[in-house]
Amino acid sequence: LDRKEFKAVFISLKDELGLSNKVIKQIMAEADENDDGVIEYREFVPMAVDVINIIEAKQDYKDNVEMDKIEAVEDAKDFLLHGMPRDTLEEMLKSSFKKADKDGSGYLDRKEFK
Image (cartoon, rainbow, N blue to C red):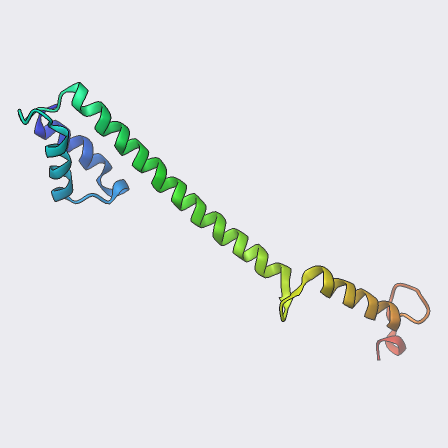
């Protein structure tokens, strides 16, 4: 690949990788090991592998951040009232309901609800 072709490859990945034109030129300089202005296949492959690894690492990071957010929401749902776990709160409410349900009907009528 000549400089123009190499730049075209990285321009297509520019937004995904967050690369500036300056960084693309630096990558080109690094990849062109023999400094002949052309990126040979043997020079390109290691660079391409690095780029693929960066893309995958970036996606893994995004996925992990999203999973952390989901887990945080789930954890918050489990602690509803002053840090009380959901199970404890449900048991407390169930116990209160049973005490109020004097006739054991499973329903609270107006007298029992007071």
